[in-house]
Amino acid sequence: MTDTMDWLEAIGQDATLRHASSDELTTLLAAADASEALVAAVASGDSAQLGREFGEHVMHVTQSSQTYPQREEPIPVPVPVPDEEGEPNKDPESVHNLPAQAA
Amino acid sequence: MENPSIPASTDARRGSLACVGLGMTLGSHLTPLARSHITQSDVVFAGVSDGIVEAWLQRMHPDVRSLQPYYREGKSRLTTYREWVDLMMTEVRAGKRVCGVFYGHPGIFAWSPHKAIEAARAEGYHAHMEPGISAEDCLYADLGIDPGRFGCQHFEASQLLLFERRIDPTGYLVLWQVGHVGDQSLARFKATGAAYRQVFVDLLSADYPLDHQMIIYRAATLPIQQPRIRRIALRDLPHIELSAEETVVLPPAKAMKPNLAIQARLAELEAAENAVEPA
View (cartoon, rainbow over the protein chains, first blue to last red):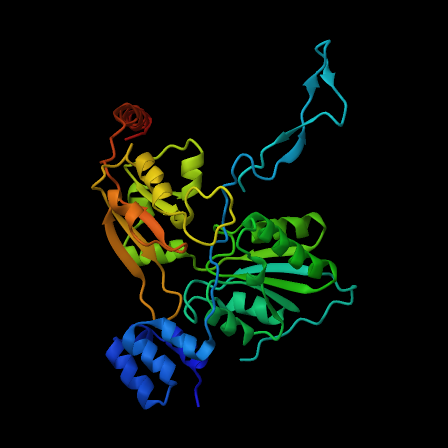
């Protein structure tokens, strides 16, 4: 028997199934003895119905955050600082914390 | 046909890293090469957008480790992403073939895969990124937009708020992560809300009229879903429900203005070329 994951993969890979109407796909899946959750999800257009079979998963999708605020995570970058005579200060402890660059 | 195999190297086993994209829609977008990276690896780390997609990935490999548990409310996502890099690199250093699997394209709006590859290469390991079909790719297909027609700018929404960027309203403007716009903590799970989005609308209104029609878009994750496409006026952006995975698209608000001076220079060049060419 084809399980729900096999069905999802098959639908995703087949042009006719992927673009079938909800009614057509519901009829096909019901006739093929697909799970109640999958048939209900297709019939209602609500994929949350699959939670009955796979469980409820709260997934966090934000994984970019390319924009770091100026104050976030300063990276020490050595910057020559002129001393009182106007010469660059070579002291390695003399660094300015510059903001991280956006990736 | 059975694929030919290459005999294993006699060299001491070296770790390696491949970061691959699953694409956006389960079953539809995974490339044969990305699948091969997954199945041939020793350990798989999963940064995907849907629990069912993660379960699908677990069928491809016996050792799939979810990166989801490293998110936590109140914890900076930057910290989480650094932990992801450390997790992958620990296994690479242990001599494993590591595959980082991310939804969409592993290198688009994804900090960790780039950093992990950079770290692996810096330490002398082989590291590779395999592209996937991204939300951006789906957006062009589902909305019927060709970025070459008028040009297309992309920004993470917060970057547009926090830095002085130049918007070109004669092209498309695609804004990512609008649900989190203005979140400087990087630690929220929930959207930042109406007041933050109003600041965003105020910024955009310098280049777009408030009744400018914009598109709210979300690609299909499961093959039984359809893309979600809504059209609203710019002024209504603060007042709608908006999830983190939805993208905002502003079509051009103005016509492109011909650069007559440059066109005249090019005409002169063409005329000069024609004058010296033999008949």
